[in-house]
Image (cartoon, rainbow, N blue to C red; front, side, top):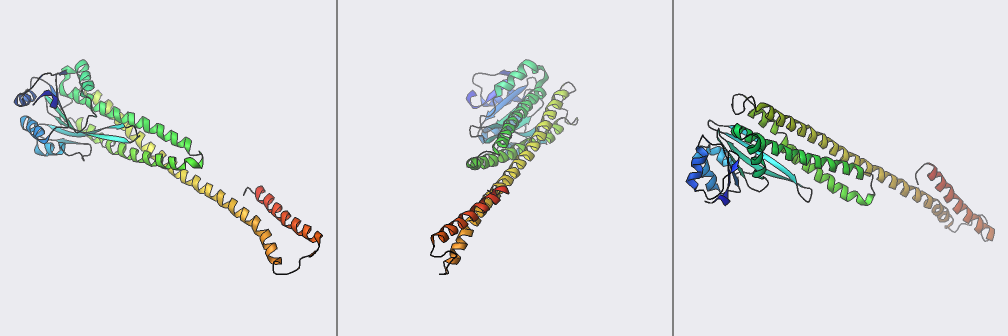
Length: 322
């Protein structure tokens, strides 16, 4: 096995060169060095070998290969297992969710993910410059902070989309289809973000529980800060979901109002046309009308038809129906 198959950091510094499979397990099990092993799209056999070297529970190893896990924290005798999700908006404004499985031991952190959504170098740089002497607990904090920041960025982008939709509510009817499509995509994105951000509260509370013994007094404020960010994101997302529902309800109400206006106009014009039609239809029964056979009668009947139509038109305009 070569370094191309994984990324290993020791005390914040990236390990380069070739590393045999057996030596990798021995390094991770060494209590004298803090290790971070990042596995991007690994095969099942590699994850199993890492699990055997660190004594990971078989259920946790099995969950690491399943991409349908909700954010959670599982506690085992020798390690912790977490499932977290990073999010990002792609070029089509769809929220892409990347699942990340974490194994946390006193001296090692192993991350497993199926895509390249995580850049371990940025997190390792924070670990190296600010907290390499604080071990795995600070590394886990930096990783959690990076994940919650991705939730923040997505929430900010979705809030901009909500404001854009509010501006389009009173746009031309020709843009109605685009507004409906964007509104549906926004609600789906907010639902996805809510599903991965809301359970983070339970994960952070579990990590900060003193029975676990992972976080000392010096690091507790850092985790508390991440927890506060999680609460802000959760409240932010819930507020935007209410706004998105309000946008949809307002859109339906505007559609109903536009339909009522159209129906009033159509009905008014139908009434204007119906009166002359009724008059001409009545005398179309071979009945002589006043002035029949006389030019004055033709002029008078024409004026009556036009006059009745004009009176109805002015009446409907005054009432706002036309």
